[in-house]
Amino acid sequence: MTRTIDLFAGAGGFSTGFKKAGYKITKAVEFDSSIAETYKNNHPETKMIVDDIRNVDQSDEFQPGEADLIIGGPPCQGFSMAGARNRDGFIDDPRNYLFKHYFNIVKRVKPRVFIIENVKGLLSMAKGQIFKEIQNIFSDKNRLDGDSYTLYWRVAKAVEFGIPQKRERVIIVGVLNGNDINFEELWEKTKDDITHKDKSFFDRVTIADAIKNLPTPTSDGIIDEPYPETDYERYIAGKEIPQKIYNHETRVHSEKVLARLQKIEVGDNFQSLNENIKSVHSGSYGRMSWDEPAMTITTRFDTPSGGRFTLPDQNRTLTAREAARIQSFPDAYRFYGNKTSINKQIGNAVPPKLAFFLANFVDNIFLQLSE
Image (tube, rainbow, N blue to C red; front, side, top):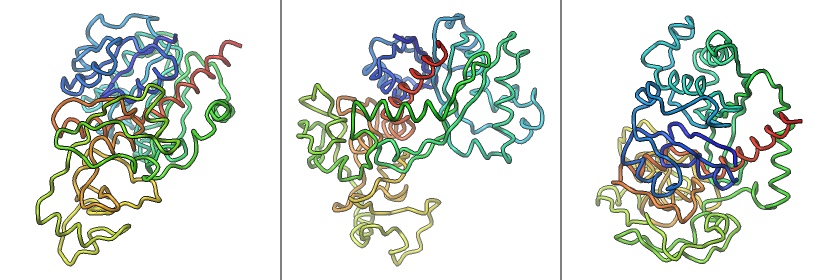
């Protein structure tokens, strides 16, 4: 089993896909104790380090050579033009500490490969200078004690991996010490490998394909596992179908919100209302269509004003279980914490199905490197 460390692990979306592909997640880091509780309950075999990445970086938790792979998505809110113009300013800017400590742990462990998942805007931020600086930092032998990483990247569209949402993220792959790989060739080979085992893996999936077999939500969120009717539902249910599944709680909206939702047809949004609704989201109060994938699942998927998250035939937004399905979490995956925390866990997660593809992709990278 390939030894893997998951930094910024969240609820465990990245880890779930890699574990399904046979990887051994030895350690994970998550600073939010509520979110870490979900991870620990679903991945009891992994050592979960509940702490700020700054403290973990300063400790002796990680040792050289203890993992072959590091995965994670350091948030990039602090990346700045000032940092892009000055290498030392970028890496040492306190606003970029999350990225800096990800880098420091990669530097210490020296995995053969690392993967960063991030918003696709990272590529164009500050006219591309931010991303160029990230490339420079990882290729700088002076910073890595004589070693360096070659970076490859690709914008991954969730819909192209049989995931029912229009999520797009940049995937950055670092390979140790200039070992050139044929990135595009291996990417396509991985698609062929998976299709050979699962012919429907990359098929287009709609909201109906993903959640229509779920029953009416309950007050405690616990339901009997419904019979899977589509290829996607069978994938989510897994070989060992759970008897009960969780997090399918009834959504309660105010009378004012319900009155608004009743006026909105499939495909429409707040613009259909004769009201002056101020929203930062263009899809506010949007009603989904059964025949289409969802928009990107965010941390506000249960809020009508948060985007196009109202069901096609009901005046309510998505439950946590429905959102988790659209994110491709297995039905057996249970989320812990209050509503706000669970929404954050699901909305910020790497879709496990995409992670499973990336795990198979890394398998092919390791094979090519060993030739």
